[in-house]
Length: 64
Image (cartoon, rainbow, N blue to C red; front, side, top):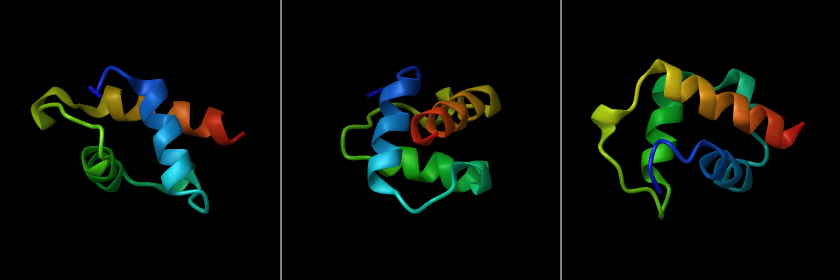
């Protein structure tokens, strides 16, 4: 899984952290959690604020 797979990342985060409110997750934690996902395999340098915002929004949409 790569940084560009925002929707899949959001689904996996929602499954892994069902009790977590994605609106309260800071970007440092979010980045670390994404990189810790078992299927994730991408360079941390390819991640930026826009990518993290997109992942966070997709996660919010997923649990809404």
